[in-house]
Structure formats: C-alpha cells, structure tokens
Image (cartoon, rainbow, N blue to C red; front, side, top):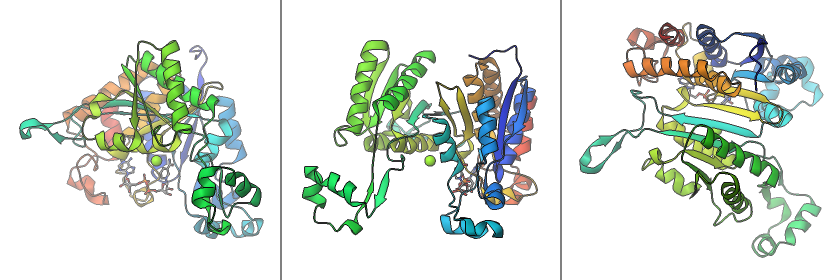
Amino acid sequence: MSDKNTKRTIVTLPGDGIGKTVLESALQVLEAAGFIADYVEGDIGWEFWRAEGNPLPRRTLDLIAEHKIALFGAITSKPKDEAFEELAPELKSLGLIYASPIVGLRQHFGLDICLRPCHSYHGNPLNFVRRGRDGIFEEPSVDVAIFRQNTEGLYGGVEWSNPPDDVHDALMTHPKFSQNFGDTPIDELSISTRIFTKKATERILRAAFEHAKKYEYKSVTVCEKPNVIRETSGMMYKMAQEIQAADFPGIELWNTNIDAQMMWLTKNPENYDVIVAGNMFGDIVSDGFAGLIGGLGFAASAQYNTDTGIGVFEPTHGSAPRYAGYATSIVNPIAMIEAACMMLDFIDEQAIAIKIRKAVAEIIDEGVIRTYDMARLTGTADVIHRGAASTVGMAEAIIARL
Ligand code: NAI
Ligand code: MG
C-alpha cells in the first residue's frame, strides 16, 4: 500500500525512438490529472548498448530497486550480429553479447506477473466489428484482463541445440523421447523446455483471481492446453480448480484451449473476463485480444512482483524507429497513457486513473481528435496535414478534457 503523505519518486525509462515521445506525453497527462511525484530518468536501450556495451546499466537497476515504480517507453532490439556491428569500436573485443533489457528487467527483479488489459473504448474506429444474425453488424464490447506468467515456461531460456550428453541421457529415460527421437543424431536436436513451478503458477493464478474479485469480474479462464500438454498446462488448471474451490467460490472458473480461444476471439470476445495463461500462450492471447481493441496504439502492460512491490509499466509497442525521426511525432500516446493508469492502479491512486481514463474515453468517443492509426491512414509524415492528430495533439486534447 502506498503512503500518500510522502511524495513518490517514479523512475522514467524513455528508452529509444517513439518510447521517448509517448512517455513525455504520458507524464504531461499525469501532471495535468493532479498526480504529484518526482521523476528520475533511468538509462536504458540501444544508445547504452552502443556506448557502454550494456543496454540495461547497473545504475538503472539500482534506481528501480530504490524507487520500485518505473514507467517504461520502448527500446530498440536488433539481431546479435547487427548489435555487434554497432558497438563502440573499443568495446568490440570484449566478447559482449546483446540481450534484451526488457527480459533483463523481468529476470533481475522477478517480475513474474504480467497484466495486459484489453478493453474497447466506445467510438474507437479500430474496434472489432462482426456480422451478426440477419447480417447486422455488431461491435462487441471487449473487457478482458490477461494475466501472463512472465518468467517461466517456454520463454524460461532453458534450451539447447545439440544438447550435452547428460541432458540427452536424461531425455532418453523418457519412453516418448526414446521412441520418437531416440534415433535422431544429437547434433540434429533442438530442445526448448517448458518449465512451470508450483510456486510461480500459484502466484499468477492468485493474481488473476484476486483481480477478478477486486474488479468484480464474474469468471477466470485458464487458457492453456491441458488435454495435450498434460504436465504443465494440466498442473495449472488443476491448481486453478483448487484455488477457486478454496478461496474464490464466487468466481466461475473456465478452461479453454489456446488454439480454440484464438478462433473464438472473433466469435464471442465479450464473454471473457479475466484470462490466465503461461508465458507463451499469455503472450499470444494478449496480442489477439489487443487486435480487437485497436492494436498497438492501445495495448499496455504491467509487469510486477507482489512481494517486492516493484512494477514496470509500459505500452506493448516497440520503438517504431521509422516514426522516430518525424519532425512532428504522429504515434498514438494512448497505450503509454493507459500504462501510466495501470501504474496509478498499482500504487493505489485509482481516483486519478479513473479521471484520466474518462478523459481518454470522451476524446475517443467524440471522434474529432484521432491519431493516424485511428484515422486508418498510412503512417507517413504528412498525415498531420491530412487531418490526423499528432502525439502532442492527442495528449493535449486529453489534458484539456481533464
Ligand atoms: P513497433 O511496435 O515498434 O512498431 C510496429 C508498427 O506499429 C509501427 O511501424 C507502427 O506502424 C505501429 N505502431 C507502433 N506503436 C504505435 C503507436 N504508439 N501508435 C501508432 N502506431 C504504432 O514494432 P517493430 O517495428 O517490430 O519493432 C521496432 C523496434 O522496437 C525493434 O527494435 C524491436 O525489437 C523493438 N520492440 C520493442 C518493444 C518494447 O520495447 N517493449 C516491443 C516490440 C518491439
Ligand atoms: Mg508479444
């Protein structure tokens, strides 16, 4: 719980490209909404990789550890070889390997809970529309909160190509492995593991149920594949049944398979409330739902650890390098503003978050101020002359409404 009597310090992590622009707009909105805080800027991103050989310097980790709450714009990542090419000449002999600072943040602080809300704003021209009975178009109102386990599973990094002998020997003890892969030469094997621990699984499930309870959602859906991936998905669903029965009897527990869920996205997205999944399926299903509510200009995520209270809040989109050089920034700041609202929820400043979301909703519903994506224009620099609002223009419209 926050202590509202002491002024907070928020770490800002603008990062690269449009991350800087959207973060600046979000900070202006926060200020206009009456959120009082000090800000310290943390170094993160490509610039620091090139100059220092580390896109996530130690001093940035220390800042986050000290202040606990960070607002993150976006960073640029490039493939290994390209990353090496761009290193400062004096660093090239040091054997440095580029690693994503986002993954670095997650691992360093154990940010195991990832929350990605997807709610449609009334009047958003990018909202999903489907043809209903009698050919009449329907615009279902989507309001889901996706809880993605953020540190384990298929993205846990335990993987090999040409695995060492002891790993191979261990795998050979599994009848399915020896039967199906036993004849494959070791150097022709690539293996990525999908590890779920009870501890992290329980934490993501409880986070999902608690969110459902707090915000009065009627159901929690486990979106995995327990009939096929019996051990990991199976464990998650079984634990969900136990947790629901013991502690959340008022909330319905549903179970969908990730593949079927993606098919149902366009059929009945309004039926889902809170969704919980492992790392990869959570990544997939959250992008799927984000597509129904306007895509990258609207999708935000929170990554946090409930034990330490450390949280990093960010838009889902990247640094969009192509758009970063425009004299007038055209990208939509709403995803970053939504990320800032999630930060406010997290630190118990919900009244301010409600105020900001209301202003955003009004501007969208009015339909006068629209960034290029909302106007369905191709993102060239001249969209401003064709009636699209700039990043700053959108932020100012929201501020005026506050
Ligand atoms: P991206 O998300 O940066 O941009 C893809 C396209 O989406 C853009 O070209 C633009 O058309 C649109 N877009 C993105 N943000 C928008 C906004 N706020 N408003 C309107 N339209 C928007 O993804 P891309 O181009 O694949 O990657 C660019 C760089 O960003 C890469 O280096 C990538 O590694 C990095 N990246 C970083 C992420 C992060 O920091 N969380 C996430 C995804 C990519
Ligand atoms: Mg993704």
